[in-house]
Image 1 (cartoon, rainbow, N blue to C red):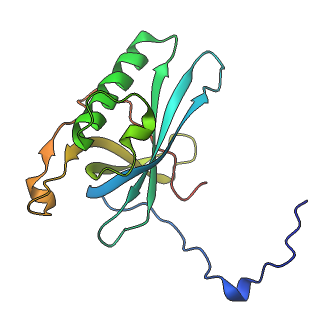
Image 2 (image 1 turned 180 degrees about the horizontal axis):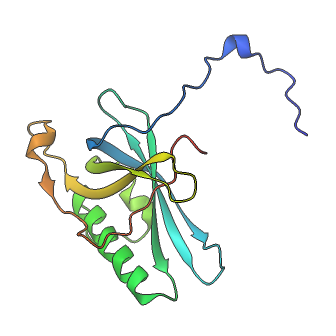
Length: 160
C-alpha cells in the first residue's frame, strides 16, 4: 500500500496510450544507463534508456540491453559490437563510464517487431548513426550499424 495523499488527478494530464512508434530513424540521446543482473543471475547487462528528442515522437523512451557480462561468448561479442556502434554514433570512442554516453545526440534506427510471448507489437533499436550537426537532417546521417547479428532489444516503452 502506498500513501497517495496530496495527489489530485485533476492537476495532472493523464498518460497517453503508448503504441509503438513507426519504423524509422529518430534523433535521440541516452538519458540513463544501469548495469542489471540477468534473470539467471549468471551475468549482467547494460540497460540504456534512449529518449527521442525531435519530431512527432519527441519524449518517447526506448530501452536497449547489452549483454556485456554473460557466459555466452556470442552474446557478449554482439553486445560489444553494438556498444561500439553506439560509441561511434555519439562520438565517444573510449568511454570510461556509461554516463560518458549520456545526452549526446545520435540517430537510432527503430523497427517494430511482434513479441513472441504475447504477440503484441513493440519497438526495437536495430542500428545507430552519427547525427550530421550541419544539416539537422536524418537523411545525411552516417550509418555505424550493428550488423545482421544484432541482439539489440528493447523493453516495450509502454510497459514500464
